Length: 142
Image: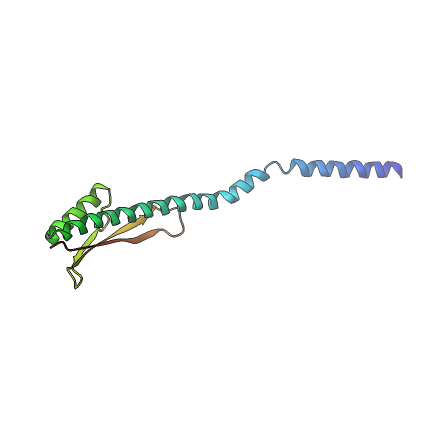
């Protein structure tokens, strides 16, 4: 009887040791399961930063265009200036610039829209194109 109990204990201990050895690949498996979500998070934050930068550039260019329009320049000159600023910044994806005014308040408004490509050949689940917009208005100085 004692020999049977001793054999049972040894068998149980060897099973526990076997379980401990079988956990060696657990970290690799967990890392493999978490990695896609981590990459989506990192690339998503990067794309958000790029979109905010492009929106800021659109706003800066329209502010420059509104200043030129406010001093009485022609709409073609304003459009050329805004487009030139955006092209110098590397934004040339379907850029549309519109100049409106003066309205009843003597305000000149410049609006620019551009397409933003979310990581071409995307790794993210929401790949495609977003339309970003920048608007500025200034009072006519005449």
